Image (cartoon, rainbow, N blue to C red):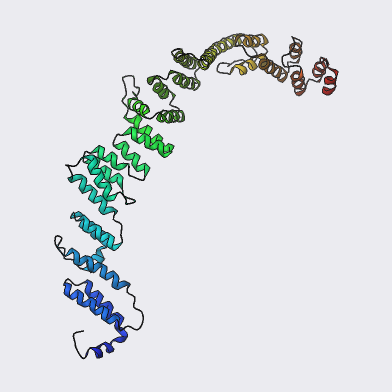
Length: 449
């Protein structure tokens, strides 16, 4: 290479070790500071490569050139970092790039990342941080546009961190704008909640169709609600959200039902003036009470809500049902006192809380047939329903004589078939025959026999 006539002989002398010689030149180059020496060593590598008979693996050469190019560029102003390629290789490019970014040379750091084929997310995020902290003169809109114009087409950028920086710099509006570009909906909603933007966080969680995120928003909102002197939450934030997004009311309803917070739900509907819904919630609250007196109190409370509501046919039916339920509880209490006082069979008697038909069945079971008829009249049970209940209960408890008397009481609204089925099912063949004989149609008698 230097014009020496002895060069050919020298090359022939180590032809067998030429690959090793090239590797040594590359190794020398990455430890060298002087650019002229580096160029000379690389030219020597290329010259020696021409004399290798087998294919030479250029991977080490190309990788070394990458480190060398980076090291030679950072030696130039304004960085003036005198570092060898070997030192960069030992440090690794990602760590070296972070070092450059800390010196605010974001463009150079970005170019190195692109050249080396590594992720640029860290550099862009650090640039955004610097931009937000120093761009005091820009409005939130202008700064957001500038940031998105720079990194908007980049995937997997941590927008939640950028929004956090904006919030830390007392720019919540900017943070709200930036966080909406975050792909991870969980991070997006978490940041919106930290920014106290409850309305938008609720809207985003509903749009995600993830019920757990919706519940998380509701819990955070409830935790922020002020408590009045009675120890009840004022629900001002929640009501404001519902006014903007009616779907949020349905989500809150489901949340309270799932967590059995009926009292909270009742207060919510009461505050927004939906008295009919408050009444239905109060009914659920009443039915959840084990104490009968408390249950009656809450039922009366729910009826009071409906009185303040415009009575349509549906609401009127519900109101009547509630009042009947209260009357039933009071009547059950009277029956309990009466039966326990005269020690009716089955003592002690516990009737309060039973359904209407269960009460009828219980009264017949203990042989108080007159009281059963009184319940039928007082609570206006439909005849077919009452007759079927009484027939079945009499037969089941072996009151066959009473069953026969009942069959002769008057014309049955459900016919004689059910009398016959029950008497036969519960073991009274003589009564079954008597009942079949009461059928006037001989063909029907024949079928039963």
